[in-house]
Each structure stands twice: as C-alpha cells, then as structure tokens.
Image (cartoon, rainbow, N blue to C red; front, top):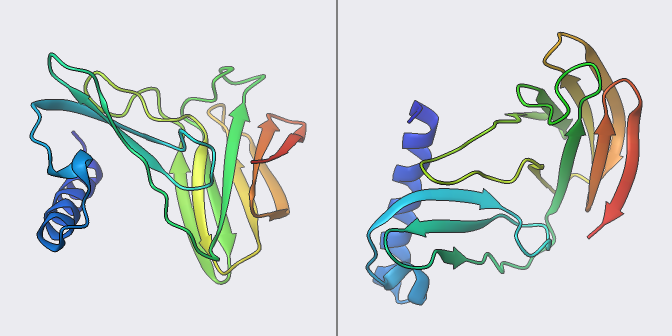
Length: 166
C-alpha cells in the first residue's frame, strides 16, 4: 500500500469512528466485517464519491455518499490512442480558483478491488477548471475552462469528444 493510500485509510477510519460515536454513521459503518479491499467511485452518478468495501466470505458493503450542497465537481474519463487505450499512467491536473489537484489513472487501487477509472475532482465553489493532461507517452494536452457538473471524455490528441450531465 502506498503512503497516500495508508493516510487516506487512516483518515477514513478516524471519520468512521467519529460518525459512529455521534450515532450518524449508519449501519454500513457500524457493522463489523472482515474486510480486505476498498474501491472508490461515483456508483450512483450523482457527483460524489461512494465507497465499496470488499468483505471476506460475504457480499461487499456499499457506502453511498448522499451529501447535498452547492459545491461543484468534474469527472474526467481518458481514452488513449497513441498511449494505451485505458490511459493507465496518464495524469490530469485540474486548476481552479487558485488551487490545483492532480490525479493519475491507475490499473488497481486495493486488494481485490479497482476504483473507478473516471477521475473525480471536487471544485468547491469554482464553476469550471482548466485541465492539463500528461499522457503515458509523454504528450501533453491542455483543455481550458471545462464546466463543472459533468463527465467529460477526453481522447488523446482530439480533446473533449463527449460531455455528459449526470
């Protein structure tokens, strides 16, 4: 497990303990399971990340994030043409409101589980972001002012080829 995964798991565990202590964790957090893997993704396509926990000898637990609010998000799906088709190894940097977030497309994320290949950026109050893509073959692509609240599919060398409001 990478250091960032360990830190994220520790943060998640601390949050679960706080929610349980407050009685607000819900049955998915309060139940005891022998779990071995975790995957993150927007399973219900509502713009926030949900968590799927792989349990040993029983069905997985889906922790749906149903938080509402006025914050913005953007999802990016990459399709390689010169690089590998799944764009594994590509990095996207989203710049918005004086901040930057970087995420990489990975082939796996945890034991017995794979997170969503669509990259999810929480933009806060920003309504758009500039995207800089570094493809696995070394090519770079810039896409300015991509509006929030959508999934954009970016094809290597062609830019945005599809926009979906979810």
